[in-house]
Image 1 (cartoon, one colour):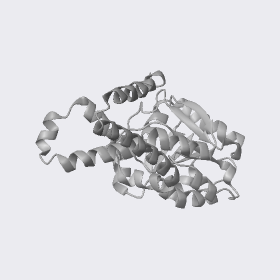
Image 2: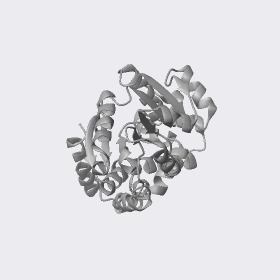
Image 3: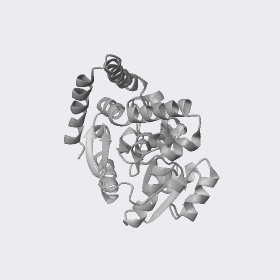
Image 4: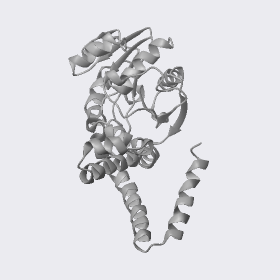
Length: 280
């Protein structure tokens, strides 16, 4: 099977090397608007060769769109214009509602399978790609009933070959859940990093004293603005909702500190500990 990956970053590059290693793909073609990314991907054997968008789409059995989500809005209609009835298009974007609304009436909408592989790191670019990124993780197929059955089957086999489990959601539910379990985590990490940078003028002191707990908390603050600003833009309303709730929770902790209500503080921490029943 020939796979064309558009956008050779962390997700696209990791899919390229994984699908080759597991035998799902016999040939992987890379498409990227940065020639240096194609060069890096070929040297790292993430892809076999680079092509233009038109060439890559024409020869592929499966086209994976792994660009930032704002770029997907421009690319997906053009890609769907070019595909035939036996080709499958898979997008791996972190937001879905706006994207899918805009291509809902496209004549080839059924050839697209909207997917979200719930995997990643704080790093970006082809140099960040790793072969075991998807092992044991969840891939969400969104609005699968709008896609052709054979296309959904192909996408499912692709992600299962990469070691993933499958789940199904509609577009609204997907974007709400992702705001709570993913998008707010990044905003909180960005905010904490800015707080520390504002208050700690001595960078060497931060490096010397930072514990592993601090490192894990601000790890996501290393994430690419090129990727995350489009996500926040497209999922703005849901992110605002969860951000309001997060600010409310922070405000309650602040009030208890002001009042020296450490019994209440204790109770709230114990309530927060209940998350361990879910995240084992």
